[in-house]
Image (cartoon, rainbow, N blue to C red; front, side):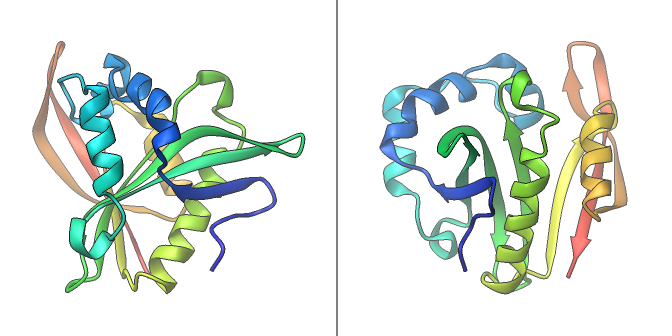
Length: 174
């Protein structure tokens, strides 16, 4: 199965992505949705990229999202599968379109559509899930539009500078 459409390509992370990942992973704005609170070094990112590959061994997979513009591919974000459990056929899902000027152009929707088909048909996943802050309505709307349904509410789940906040779990079942 090709992980691409006319406008989007999903691909493995390469060492040449390290500069982008360094910026994205060390941006405190991204930390609010990634549960990360410490910066990554180039060395840590290099080790991660070199160790990545087998989702069955690592229980996670990061794919880079490339958009095709004027016949050329530009990297606009990442898609992560995590907590992969092949026994129960489930995985968590996270998506990032980093630059605000690349958002609301359909890149995330197209990338998610490609990933869902790959997860369900190649990886034999039956359930994809994501966890989203109740205050992130844009993300909730995005995943609901893709067919995900709310299945749980985790009360007072995350600590923020404004205080505790709830988190919603959404899932898509094959």
